[in-house]
Length: 156
Image 1: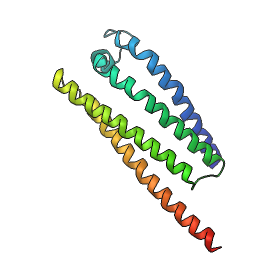
Image 2: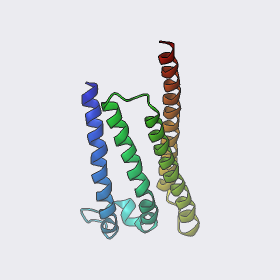
Image 3: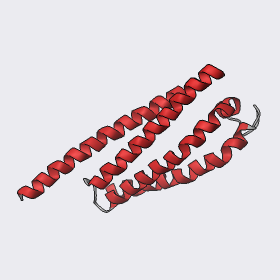
Image 4: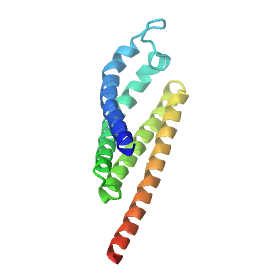
């Protein structure tokens, strides 16, 4: 069951590559939709002109995080779990989440000051910061587990 779960997770990560590319391509198109159109999304249709630049600013780090997740899942499939490579990859993911959170926070402040408040932006920034925190905690757990593993390997 673990191999199936890992394979499924890696499939979803790779699907996210395509979905993110689709979002990059579709965003300008979705901004031009009017209310009542089949592809009208309230957030993008009404606030897209405020959100497009922050969105495109975080796309590269989104891809970087996806690549790191993909590599971690590949390592897990090879039974390379408690390894410093995975800790480094998790630290990169954490940095990506922090960057995206800062972009969201700065965007929220600029939008709130210059135009009007869009609460969704601050909620996304808070969510990205929380994910960064979770990843950082997991990274520290992995690092400690690696130390314990190495100590045990030296004893035997």
